[in-house]
Image: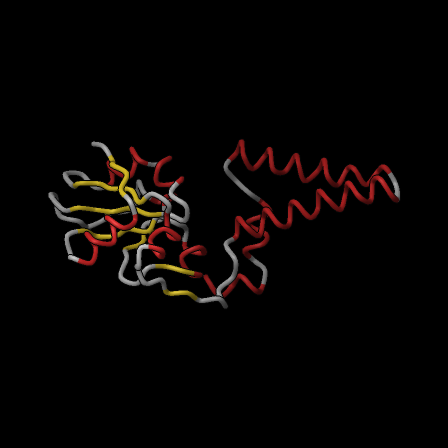
Length: 175
């Protein structure tokens, strides 16, 4: 099984003509903020456990935010749609929008958790560096602690900061 890259314009044409099914592989918190109405949703993190429910011989088009997750998961995406023609949108959601696909947006939905992690971790590292330089060198330990947490998250595939941020009141809407 293989997955073939396709331009957003070609994908939009196949979807508009009813020749293909569009599947969003972004996580639920990302999809809550913006998505293509009518697209199926199977997060990449749950590909193995999810059934697409697409008939063999169908054309399935997968998309993510930028196109990199679909490219990274090409083998798993092809395996998730056995007997189907599997296509991957190059450029992701922004490219589909530029190709004329409608995008439903909810600006009130929380920012995706991983963006919140990046902002929080980056802010804490910067704060530790600035306080370490201007106030007391012991504040550099804050930057080291956050860095160690990021290494742990990368190695273990668990992110305590993301779990903590998910509990914040502004993120409870997506639950």
